[in-house]
Image (cartoon, rainbow, N blue to C red; front, side, top):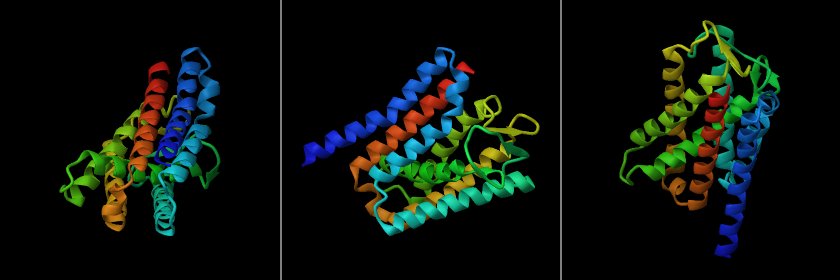
Length: 221
């Protein structure tokens, strides 16, 4: 049974990497525009594997996921419409359907990133590390991925700042909201959150695949 589960997780990891590697190869061969337009599909696929194998299999985790989705959408809406938290910016066309100017995938991204970075942080840091330190480190992992995205966002019509460089408050706000989300998640999940090795494997590979994919987009832009 354990061997079967390991094989399944290995297949999931292969499917996590497949579209990202194909995208990197396609971009390097000059098909940048086509693959950039499909970015949202990569993010949706990552969400699908996350939801199935993290696992988000109980009502509490789905409620937390919904909370972080709504929280992410709300702060982004306030940012786009009132210039709060992140600076003066607006979303482009390459992140899929929007609600009042905010791509739905951005809310999903906030939620997925909260879960996987918290899981990675919990695994990396010593067992007796306080929840505040774990949450702070998990939020830092979220900001690290955002830094990669900021390098290419205006070039690929994900989002654009005015002026074009994102302000320092963008990164501070990303960390602050990520920290609050992580505290909520870690506070609810407690020790149960660190008991599933498969969730760590899936989280790590989703994070690394996203980092490599967006890093490659920035390199080949």
